[in-house]
Every structure is written in C-alpha cells, then in structure tokens.
Amino acid sequence: MVHRLISTLIGLILYAAGAQAQDEMKFENWVYSSQIKSVQCLVNGIISAVPVLRLNSTDKMVIQFDDLSEEEDNEFYYRLYHCNKDWEESPINEIEFVDGFAEERIRDWQLSIGTKQNFVHYWFSIPNRDTRVRISGNYILHVFDRNNDNKPLFTRRFIVAENAVVPDSRWVRPTTTEDIRFRQQLNLSFLVKDIRLQNPQRDVYISVVQNGIWTNSLNNLPSRIYKDGVFTYDQFGLLSFPGTNEFRFFDTRTLIGRGWGVKSIDYFIDGSEVLLQPGQLKDNTVYSFNFDFNGNFYIDNADYFSRAIFDNNITQKNKLVDFRNNFAYFDALDNEWRGREKDLRADYCNVIFTLVSPKLHEDVYIFGAFSDYQLHPNFKMRYDERRGLYIGEALLKQGYYDYMFATATEKQKIDFSATEGSWQDTENDYKTIVYLREFGNRYDRVIGVISSNSVDINN
Image (tube, one colour):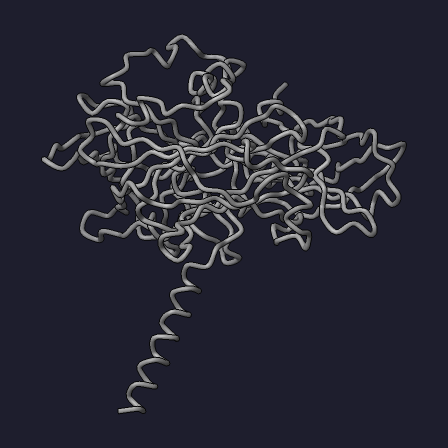
C-alpha cells in the first residue's frame, strides 16, 4: 500500500512537471489558452504588429483581448520583463527598468452585448498610473491567470526606443539574376546622435523584421562601414527578404450578407459558420497589387454600425496610409481608453479556410496576426484527399482579416514560396531596431527604430 502511494505521488509530481513545462511562458508572441481570442496591441490608436513606444514620451499602448470562458471573477494580471537583443530576460532588477510595479491586475472589462458567443472583453494600457518603463530595450508583456496557478494566457513583444538615430534607408533591386524578381534588398545607413560611442562596430547591432514576422527576422547584424558617426549596411544580400505576396483577405463585418472573400454563411442557434472562397496556389501566378493590412485584422460589426471604410476610387499606392488609417482607433488618444461598443457587439463565427492544392511535402498552416504571425498548432490545416484541398478552421471575431497559407522550412523558418509565391514588387512593412550594448553595461539599449516600406523601391 505504501509503495502504491509513493508511486502515485511520483506520478502526480511528474504530471505536474509536464503540465508546467507545457505551460511554460515563451518570450515571443503566443496565445496559450484556447479561451483567449482577438489579442491586439494598439500604439496611439494604430494597430501595430511590432509595437514601439518612444521613451519618455506621451505614447500609449493599449492591449485588448477577449475571454470566452464567460467567468466574471477572473484574476488576470500582467507582468513586464526586460529582455536583451536576443529576447532573453535581462539580468537587471525590476526597480531598474520600471517605475511603480512590473506586475499588476487588469481591472477594466465589460461583458459582450447581444452576441451568441458570450465573452468578456478586457483592456489595459502601458504606461499607466501603476507601471511606467524607465529604460529603453526589448520588453515582454506576460498576461496570466492568478486564479489558475499563474497559467500563462498570452505573451506579447514590444519595444521602448530612444530617439538617437537619424535614418537614411532606401530599397534597391537585388543585382543577382536569381533574386531580382523575387527578393527585396535594403540599403541602410544611419547617424547616431547625442551618444558618445566607445567602440561603435563592437557595440551597435541591428535587427530587421518584415511585417511583424519575428521568426524570419534578421538579427545581430554589425555594420559594414562606420565613418564620421554614420553606420552603413549596404552589402548586397545582407538585408534581403523574400518579397512574398500581398495578403489574402476576407470581410465578416456583416453576417447578414456575404462580405469580400466569403462564399457562404450558415446560421445556427449557437452561432454562425463562414465558408471562405476557395484559395488557389499563387506560386506560379503573375503579381497583382492590392491594398492589404500586412497580416493584421480589424474588429468591427457593420450590422450595428454603418460606416464606409473603403474608397473604391483609391488606385494609387500613395493612398496606402489613408487606407490603413481608416482602421485606426483614434479615440485611443484620449486620456482614458473605454470599451468600444463595436468590440462588445462583434460576434464570433467559425471561419472555414480551404486551399486547392496537391498534397505538399510540408504541413500547411493558416497564417496572420490572428495566429500571432506563427505556425501555431491550432491553425494547422488537414488534407482532404478526395476533394484535393487543404481545409482548416478558426473561431474569429467579426471584422476585416488578412491571412496567408504558410509552410515551415527545415530550419523552422516560415515559408510562403510553395503557397503564395514571392515578388519583388510586393508592398511590405519593415522595422529596423538599433541596439547598443556598451562595455560594462548590463542590458541592451534600443537607441532607435527605423520604419520603412518596400513601395519605396519603385520611387
């Protein structure tokens, strides 16, 4: 009897250890709970794939999400972690990077209104009256459930940057024949101001991120040339990315009629099921420009709010900023963020994705901001041999969504070549993060973030 009790206790300990390992927090963008949906970060009202706050400024980042568990007494908390340039926790103390508290409860929430899928909508902001960051650098925002053994709910990366970089970047066409039609090449130079550098080529590094896809980012790149305070990165092939293709999109802001990209809608007592138009492989198609959101999504319910989002006369690429500003939450610039009625009235529906394709060697995933720009197991598609297509589904809130179909390379990078193709003309957003690690310092500063867009390649 004693041996059986000991064996049972050992089994419970091993089970608990396994569960803890499974729920271990990642220092990347990730949602751990199937009950947490529609996580978004907005900086000054603009949806951001790579959120950047300027140090000692009035910038505000609002984080919002839904909990589908329907419980109203949850104890959801957030915690901040300062990270080095490799997104590992810095060895500095909490008091060194935050004024106030690095950990605090999320107090603002509201119940959904008139939806078939009940949920609780939560939001909070950084900085706030309890938490203000003191230094620049990479940060991880960890949201967890204190009532459930501090189980992670989701994590988000964001950056706090100084204003010590004067950029000069331009996109050029690759010179190699095999890349000229399919890749985008950045020639970058920047001046560092107001900082006395002891060993510039040893202490300064950059990382470049395309469309918020951290898995495929270029990291820890030293400069090729440093002269008169200017860093230069102009080696062909150094800052080079596949152009990929414009994102696919669909519109479920209304469930009364079919929006863009929607083939049919079925209605049930407990919700709706949306079947999207069948996707086709684009690897051998001709490039065609369309306005996209570079993978992001925007929550809205047009059945309650009649508002013209799109201008059908927009045809020029220089209208891209106007297009995206139509999706901004400009009232986030107020001193206090309030729960918006559209976030409470937008319902959830089961969205079915299909991709007509022969069976590929790699697994195929649905990919976008709603999958954390990751090849998430919840978004893995299955192959239907009889119909000759991949099929997958996701529970998504009403809104406008960008997405792609993606596979993984042998090195676990995210690959679009077999499903979407790659074109040098594709419009993509890039963030270049400039890090400084001076001798004797215990953390990596972010002395500047440079934003650029590949449409400049044709200017």
